[in-house]
Length: 115
Image (cartoon, rainbow, N blue to C red; front, side, top):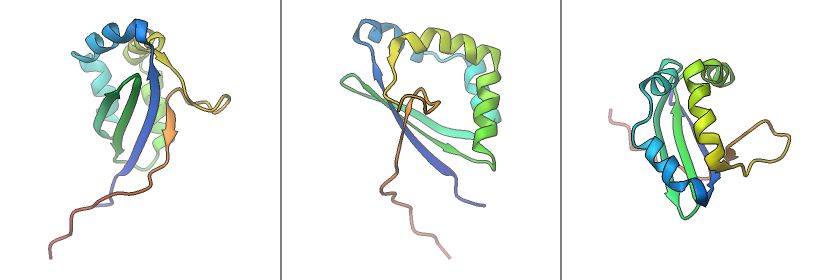
């Protein structure tokens, strides 16, 4: 099996929406989670540091762009984003098409393989 692709991204959490965002993420809707799992997203984690949200996930698949398009077309995910997007301030390069700013991986520790 090929190793998954790893993705890191960052966005700013608006202070006035902090509690709402944290409340929403204390119980992410099952349909939103299913949309990600169905296209090969695994180990999705969001960390908070001050006002910065750092997201990390692994993609197990062949076409990340198609997987992202499938998630974006999901009606329940669209409703979820209508609640979470106002809580965030994008740090992505204008015109990039990204909401969360992609991060460049600079190092990764992989456990040794056993024979």
